[in-house]
Image (cartoon, rainbow, N blue to C red):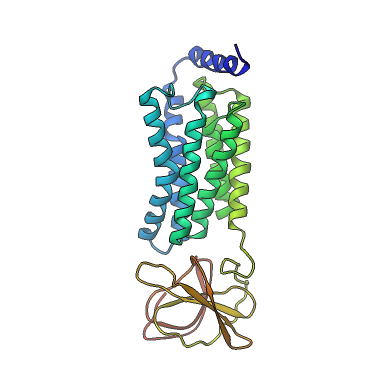
Length: 310
């Protein structure tokens, strides 16, 4: 018997020895990775868009590739008998589901990028893809808890996006870890390892993916902005990109940026057209004479024309 087969047999024997626990099963089902990812993406999308409709659209697209695709593939594999159950106890049955999940996340990232998704939505899907890759490689040689990995990764992402107060959700990782141990699905080492990997990988990838590229629209606005008077036709939005100027661009009804943006240099009074895929902040209606925004918050308006509002 190979070493991998021996580990599988130990895992199966541990599960058989565990006495039934409705509480543990309920916790595992409620905090299932699919539900956690859905809630995480929905929260990030809601914080990154100006309306519930836009948030729902981006979240639905991201969830389709990160949750629906891998879970549908897993259901097909279980029904066809290629894997024993959705928990993938046997190591030799994990490769195909992991590859499907990784391919789905990669396709989701590509499509979201092409459609101009908010940067944080892209970042969280990239974090999921990174987690799938690392955990997929890890579980080929050692079993770890996907439940604790996903929820610990979600908490790490929330801390980076919203602040330290979201660490109040960290006990959920311990709770789901207990449930997986109680059900005989994992050892304590597997649970802790999964949590550490999930937090480090998802948090690390999310942080890196959110890092702005200097000289592009993604560069954070300075804390203090100096409004510049600029006459602009039509509904527009502007994002301060640093220095003494503004990023200025137009939007259509679908909240999509124009083909390019203008960087208006307040010092020289010159404008330069540049390509861009997405904006993280915008305003609607009328004609803005000049405005500056930082992330989703409006910081300053030099003037407006035609009853504009934002």
